[in-house]
Length: 101
Image 1 (cartoon, rainbow, N blue to C red):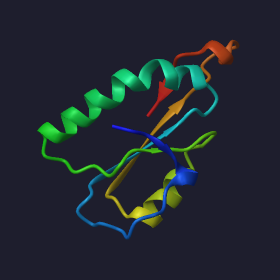
Image 2 (image 1 turned 45 degrees about the vertical axis):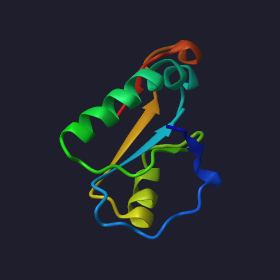
Image 3 (image 1 turned 30 degrees about the vertical axis):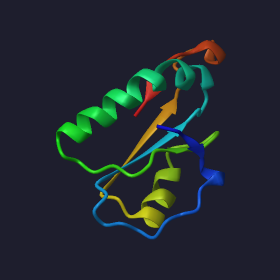
């Protein structure tokens, strides 16, 4: 699966059959995304597929925040927007590998 920045995507017509829309953002810790997403995303997509839950193409939003979920929800109209964001749980945020979902 290839991830593309949100700015490179053309917003498709809303598809009401898509239950989940995943948005990935480096947030305050790019290291967390680079470290965790290559393992997390395939496992998440596999689990949702096994549960017969439809998922739109995952989006990448550099420097995104939780509020972006509202715009994605309005544009694509999934039932659930799942934001995966690199987080800053302590003083050394540059090397943090914590995610928030």
